[in-house]
Length: 210
Image (cartoon, rainbow, N blue to C red; front, side, top):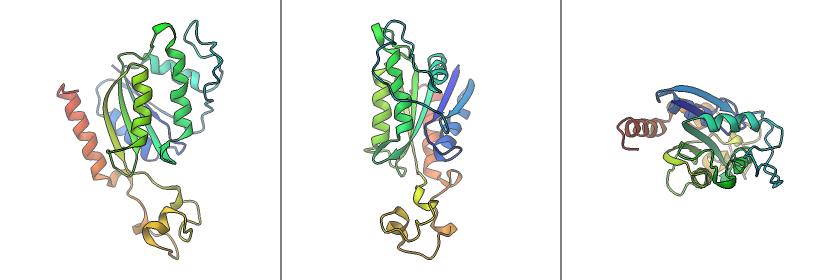
């Protein structure tokens, strides 16, 4: 069993990647985690040069990732919420899977997919989950689970978040002199709800319910 985890966050080692890694670590099989941080991944250009062989002809960091996706049995894909949708880096990665579909090839058909999102820990009406699921199902993958972690807003690290009336720090805490530890969002290790979701997913998977 080959398990591929992909963190679509531009922030390496943060909530998305930690959640993807935690899920993958509890599944049986060989595990590889890929972070898209620093990767150059172009969007699909619509050139249709992939039509004859289902191989994207662009040359960037996506090509090796796409190959690994076709070799995996389970794909765990995580993406953060930017502007009420998945971030552009994640979208570009999934958009390029259009090259797998020509002539009914569907190179990802039958693979199992698990979705990780950061939508403040809310599983209902999660636009990122819906975005990723649409890509997976259009590739005829089987979506078997979803974990919604609590993200870490950039406002906490931008340098002016403590006084910016348009940001989430002031929205939650008001204008403050400086951001202290008790103002910060929960780290992954502290997110009990996220860990409960992961445990429930793993139990259902190992129990054969999904």
